[in-house]
Image 1: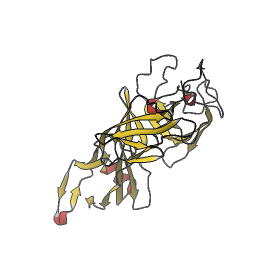
Image 2 (image 1 turned 45 degrees about the vertical axis):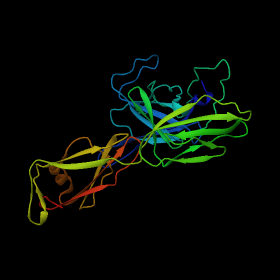
Image 3 (image 1 turned 135 degrees about the vertical axis):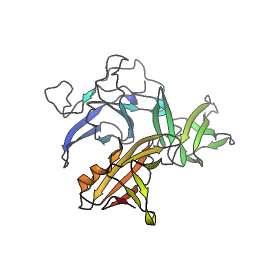
Length: 327
């Protein structure tokens, strides 16, 4: 296994920030690794089995991130976490041990201020060096059932043929049904349209020896999801196309995304009195009665969606005036 996939975790802090309504847990993880490394963080409701393939019955929430630090806010019922490093072309490192998302010095799962994950695997021989030809900076890897899918979230991918130590003199490549091209220096390859792509390439060394054909499948996704709102309960259209609703009316939000799929709908509101909330995940229909009870008058509702690779929809707004009249 590539030694670059051995994961060493550095300092981990768990802090708590106070909100008006309820304290929010903030998990801050700092990893002893390069600033451009890729990692996967799993948050668990129940502790997974670290000694075998059997895992807890409830699936984890998986977060892919780049860099050697991340700050997340675990949901109330997510009590454990673990991290592993992701390499090129789907390679994955070992999971760290499972840690608690809560600070409890007396618990064996509590997170100390400093710890180092044990390196349980030591290669008997140095593995063959893998030369990075296709840069993974533009890719986001998303788990779908038992496979990982690469998504391109930019308008080009980068080909890095060689440095003096790699021995590569040239890379031949083609995107889809296009013609074969050659690259000897750092090259950006434009990817115009969204959709599925197959990238073929192989390297030639200084003596002209050719490596086996390499195939990289990916999907380009740069479009945000689209959220639709509908009224559930009493509502009617009055003069001037003003919509009249009842306190029993609720707001239902749904979203669609054509490629990677939607991840979350986020909602927030601002009251005429100045009370304002942060964006939080939408989990159920929103009650007009509850909003009026909190705001005691006019208010605004904001919402937007984000897909599984981070494309964000523009924020949409609903304005509610006194008398339950909505514009």
